Amino acid sequence: MRIDKFLWSIRFYKTRTVATEEIKKNRVSIGDSVVKASKEVKEGDIIKIRKNQVDYKIKVIQIPKSRMAAKLVPLHIKDVTDKEQYELLRLRKISQDYYRNRGEGRPTKKDRREIDGYVGNDIDSDFTDWDDFFGENDNDDIENEIEEKS
Image (cartoon, rainbow, N blue to C red; front, side):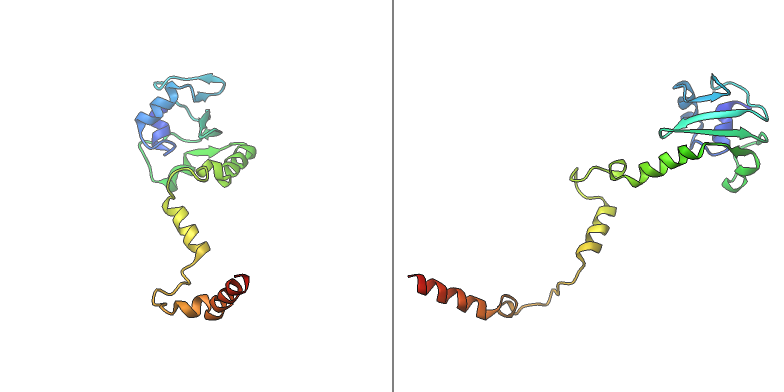
């Protein structure tokens, strides 16, 4: 099976076209050699893939006949990626810069939920007694102070 079709069938890439483009950009290799999209994949090959700044390594256990369900993928490949690569990916997801820089553009739906959760909706919309809210006594004290200064 061609490597572009293999990467698509094990659901590493969403479309075969995307898989082919990534192969053309030299982000996929078998062993230590960069491959073309037409390269045939065999059982036992170790494929190195650079995706989202992470170097994945997968070992081919079995060649699938066609695209498969996600649950069946572990029957055909074995993930031999270094744990450090997954740690890098986790750290990037945690960092706020990976998501979106603060103050850049309008808030996303996620940002809006966080803001609403932080601020809360404690203010009653039926509140009309503003004198009690601001305190009548405070206004009287301010007026007395102004009269004393004059």
